[in-house]
Image 1 (spheres, rainbow over the protein chains, first blue to last red):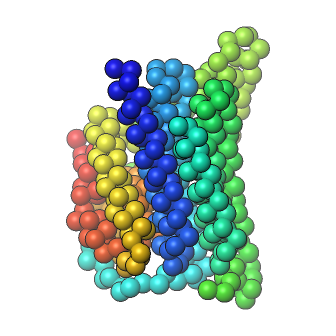
Image 2 (cartoon, each protein chain N blue to C red):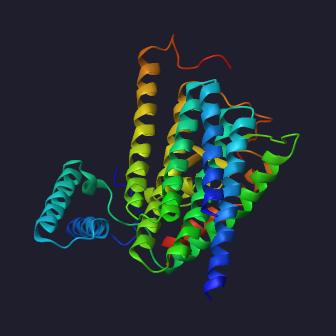
Length: 109
Length: 94
Length: 170
């Protein structure tokens, strides 16, 4: 049982590291601000989930786990809020996204 | 093994730093700084386990709080500035 | 700004203040880990200070604690986790492919629920999923930027919105 938890947690940690790295590469490669934000959101959402998930498995049922879970919840609450604020601030300042093709709002009523 | 994850995080922070230096707009820089902040929190959590000192977790949480408030404050500052002075916008060379 | 959904269970003002106080107290206890009289007293003082500031900010006048927390919410979180994983893999493929096949789109999507908390949950879920990003929320209409066309099609199929709206209709 111990080794199974160990293996799963290492798997989570390494895949978390991989996704974080991909997000960093994406933030460099993407052509403009809004597409870069998509790459950054890979590091901001799946990265913390996997890395902190792996650490929680390592810690077991302790106070450390509760603190880690609190950090995870906090990151997942604030991350989208910060990117939201960033996107709307960029939009308000007249930063136009380069669109491939304007899609008409099909869902708009 | 923790070292490998920490290394991935540090490399990503380096990439974000390059993006912050390249810009080109101020929002790209804020995005890169925000990324670095998240990575710092994760790095502190991993370091907690790598060296076995649980008090680093408190630093991680404090850093998460400061990072969030800091990014919002910077954005608010640039929004106010571009409202006051529309000619000299925060938009730089594309 | 009192546009709360009539279907939602309203938590009275005093109860929501007490819930916030309990949250603050538990946070203090978890983070300090000491149970000496002086430190407990300091915790009480800072919790009450926070409460006083929140009341001064008129937080409790408009919005109450009314996130649809329950079993359905936990189920939604797991569904969201799977969605995040799936779209992360999609974005990873795009980032790592040499030609960088992005085709950014923008669309406006109307949230199914009138409740402001549900709209926040919807917008944050959209942003949390890599590949889609909510840029603006205005009276229930969310402006969404997506990295690829498939991401936008997924979102426009409305499954996320249906799940969030279903959380409150019980």
